[in-house]
Length: 392
Image (cartoon, rainbow, N blue to C red; front, top):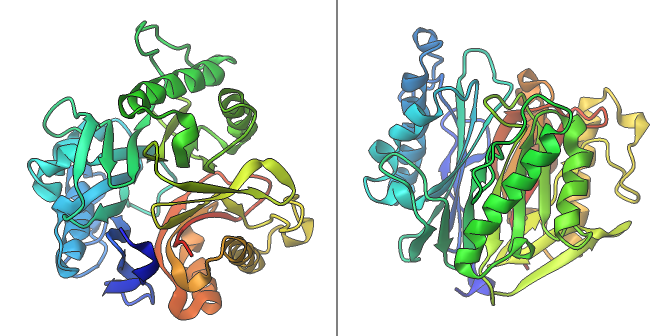
C-alpha cells in the first residue's frame, strides 16, 4: 500500500441526482453511500406496498449496495464493513440471513456488521452503509462467523481489524447476564461490551488502544458522558481513538452497541488530540485514512463548548460543523477535497434534504459519499457529523 499515490475517485453518482457520489474509491478502499429500503432500486421511487415488509426492504437496500459496487467494477462480495440502521431489531437475524444473496456465499462471512435501531424517514425500515475493499487485499476472519447468514466477529483487512458491533447483555466467559432496565444496566453492559471486544482483539494481539474509530449507538444522548467515563477508565484515562457516540432508540435487550475499526499491531498510527483536551483524540491517521471524532453542529472550534447562538439554526450548524471539520483536516495535513465519507446524525431525519443542500453549498465538488441517520443529538444540536478522509 502506497498511500502517497492515492487519489479520490468518484466512481458512481447518486441514483437520484442529488449531487454527491454513491461510490468513491481511495486506494483499495471503496466507500458506499447510505442505501434506503423503501425505494425501488430500479426507479428510486418510494414503494408504499413495502411498508412494514422488512424482508423486501432489506433486499432493496442490499441489492442497491451490490449494484453500486458492480457499476464501480467490483461486486457485493467486496463489502467488509456493513452498518445497518433500522426501524426495529426484532428481525435482525432475518436481515442477516439475506447477506449471502448480495455479499457472497463465502465472502459474507468475512464482512462485519453494525446494527442499531434509528429514527427512520417515513416508511423506510433500513438504511445500509458499506465500506468495501479491493479484492487484491487479503481478508481473514480472525473471529469467524458462527454460521451461514451471520457476520464475522473480527476480520483483518490489510492494516485494519474490523470489529463487529457488540451488545453487552452477557459477559464473555462467565455467561453472566447483565441487568436490564435498571439504573446500573448501562454501566454493566458497557463493561461487558468492552470485555467481549477485547476477547476478539486478543486474537490479533491487539488491545483497545489499537482502535482508530469507534461507533457507539447509545440508548439516548444523555448516556454519552457515562460512555465516555467508562471507556476512558479502560484506556488509561484517555479516549485514544476517533469516537462517535450517538443516541438512538436502540431497541432489543441492550443499552448500547459498540464496534469499529482497529489497526493491526505494528502498523503505524498517529493520534492528534483536541486542542483544548489532550485526553481526547481529535483524529487518528492509519492505513492511508484519517478518522475524525464526531463533530457537533453547535460545537465551538476553539473550546468545544456549546455555542448557544447556533441553537435552533440548522443551516448555521451545518456550516459550523463543516468549518470545524475543515480545521481538523488542516491540522492533520489533509483537506476537504480528500473527504471520503460523511455520516450525518440528524435530530429531524426529515431535514436531511435541507442539510444536504447546505453541505453541497459549502463543499461543492468535494462533497463525499453521504449517509443520514436519525438520532438523538446532544446539547441542542440539530446534527452531528463524523468523517473519514484520505490522509496527507
